Length: 273
Ligand code: 2HA
Ligand code: ZN
Image (cartoon, rainbow, N blue to C red):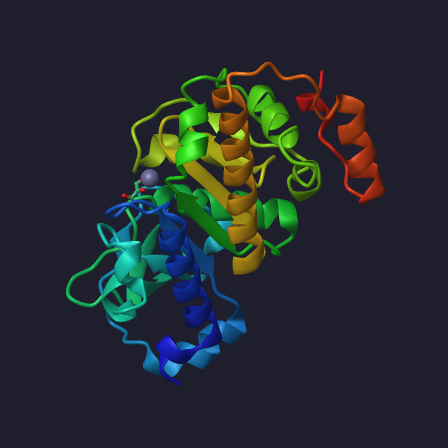
């Protein structure tokens, strides 16, 4: 089968387009990766080209040896993915020692995997470990309302988790662990990748101060939905602040615990008082 027609690639393209339409991907902002299943790979394999050069990733994680990833391209625009998938996204194979990758499909015309691949790679490694292999998607977007909050809230997991949980009743159910926060760092390298990985061992969502948000999930729906839910909560908080009124009532800590219990999830008490 043509890789482009496969369910995995079609789902990936749709998510890129949804992110673009949501307004989270100005210019070449943001990136998406998906760890393919054995079935996804076998469906696409006839269309793979081999003999591509192995290149260093600058990070390693043994539990991702020999995996295949769909990835957006470095410097590529989400806006263009739907019109020309083959140029803007690709499939890469990880080497047996998990230190290198090579392109097996797409990224035509000399493209490379996303500049944030080190962060995606280590985040996948952490999520794979804590979910027993269930987690497959890592998504980074430049979500404006979350970015705005990183200028006015303390850059702590607790401050962000509480504000976001209290902005919509569904929030504690959708991300009961809360969110992690990475202080401002230079993007694109191993340092920010390691800082994110540490938090991804605990959280499905990590805020990068003054930059954006990383979300992880089992599939495209869940991961896009998480990004959407968190960004929407941040937007609600900004509306509250910009109303110029004082907060008269909110979802209390007891309410947060009650809704979590009712929906059978365990809220992370570390992010409560
Ligand atoms: O330009 O989002 O973090 C891609 C990015 C870098
Ligand atoms: Zn970014």
